[in-house]
Amino acid sequence: MRYSKSIIFTALLSLALSAAAQDSWDDEQWEGGWGTEQEQGIDVYGYVEAAIGGRLESSPYHKRLSIAEPRLQLGFDERWQDITWTAKADGWYDGFDETWHGQIRELNAQFTVFENTDIKVGRQVLTWGTGDYLFLNDLFPKDWQSFFVGRDQEYLKAPSDALRVTSYFDGFNIDFVWSPEFDHDNYVRGERISYFNPFSGQLTGDDPSVEFIEPTRDEYALRLFRNHNGVEYAVYGYDGFTKSPEAVTENFQPTFGRLTVVGASVRMTLGPGLVNTEVANYNRHNAADHWRALVGYQQELWTRFTGGFQAYIEKGDAQTRTVLTTRLTWRDERDDLNLSLFAFVSPNQNDGYLRPTFDYRIDDYWSFSGGFNLFFRERPETFFGQFTENNNAYLRMRYAF
Image (cartoon, rainbow, N blue to C red):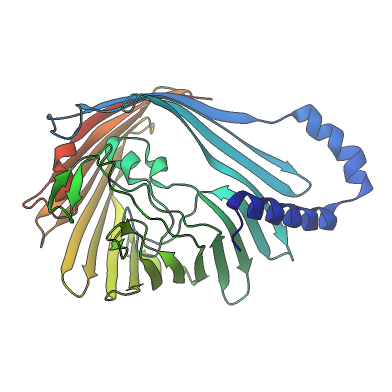
């Protein structure tokens, strides 16, 4: 019998908070602390932002406009009875599809039990791993459509409804995440960004006739980690599904295939910089396994100018893909202006993606951001090559409070 996500989380949250409250509850807290909390009120923070952007050339699949949206984000963090409550929500008008949208990005409770275990339950943004824009063991949902049209990079990480339990021990630490329902990526599927459809063998835009079949079971993720003499070690496990529809049903409808991932990472200082390595084995049920691996290095090249490099390889039964990345970042002396270039290049598939950006802080409240999403290719069926019709520029203005 399958229960809805809301029922599961209501029951789980109630039980967890009751247990935490019983551990910390006393009459003095009720008599002396309750009035103080009410007088202080809730500290709300957030921002108002306007974004505008367009494609650099006309596309046969979409209009020239790529992003046009006013956005409001509100959030708060409040601590009561040894429990930290966090909420964050967005509301915006999307000028591309001319509709209003809303999203709860965070709505969770955090508390400690047994003196060594932190629990976080509810809607939250999850992440781990060592890659810079390359995700091997991070199988939590991403929003690639937001990333490719110029929204703030915080929106690359999509929220999950999950229970996260982190326990700390002398020899190692454990991170366990349970998602009661499958959370897929906000993957590119044509309605905003055109892509290469392997079933039709050509580039395509939005096709309402294509129905994506979603799994109806939960996901699990596990991380064992420790820091020893300045070296960070971690091993990972995941049991769930691919985050984009890479399989087909018996009726030839695109769906999300079963996926089990096991991996490891190491991060440490090396000379004047930081080096990281990460590997992952992907076991796609009813398909051949494949490996992913990366090595990265970053350091300050000179004052206020940093550079990073990554080499990534993905090896499957049929093909091998290699990707090299570079991140160059410069900031001025007052840290008001930040210029960055992130570049992806695949030497063996001859495609790539350039992401130059700037951020300028006028004062403590006002800021401007902007940049480009530039794709290039030799063939349209490669990963970055399929997006060349979507090259765009964007600008954002934000007032934070």
